[in-house]
Image 1 (cartoon, rainbow, N blue to C red):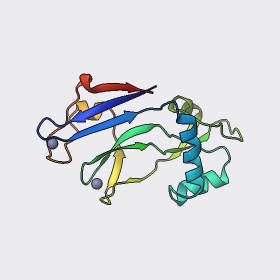
Image 2 (cartoon, rainbow, N blue to C red):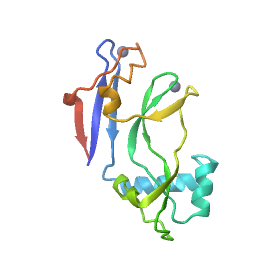
Image 3 (tube, rainbow, N blue to C red):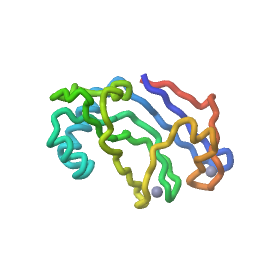
Image 4 (cartoon, rainbow, N blue to C red):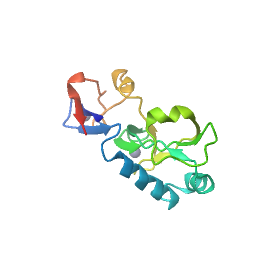
Length: 153
Ligand SMILES: [Zn+2]
Ligand SMILES: [Zn+2]
C-alpha cells in the first residue's frame, strides 16, 4: 500500500498528484528497473556498479523531486545505489526502503529535469510544511494540508 498526496496551489489552478512509496506491482517494477539499469538507461555509473556487482541493489521507492531551476515537481524512483554490508553475494529479487538498513549507500542518482536543471528529492512532507516548495506556474508558496493525503494500492 502506498501513500499519495495532492499538491494544490492556493493562487492558480496548478495541481500535482504524487503517488509515493510502493504499490502491489512493486516486485515487477523493481525487476524492470534493474533491467533498465543493466541496459544503461540510467547512465554508465550505476550500470557499471550493477555489472560488476551481482549484489548491488537500488532504492526504487517513488519520491517527489523538485527541479532546482524551474521548480517543477515530479514523482521519480529514488535510484540511489547500494551494496550489502555483510558482503552477501547475490541481490534479493527486490528491496524496499526498510531493507536498506543492511546496505551501504554507494551514490545518489543525479536526476535531471527536462529543462536541464538538477532535481533533488524532496523531504516529504517536511519541505512542504516548511514552505520550501513553490508553485512552478505562479511562484506562490505551496503548503501542506493533511486533507490532501490519498491511499492507493
Ligand atoms: Zn500557482
Ligand atoms: Zn526544470
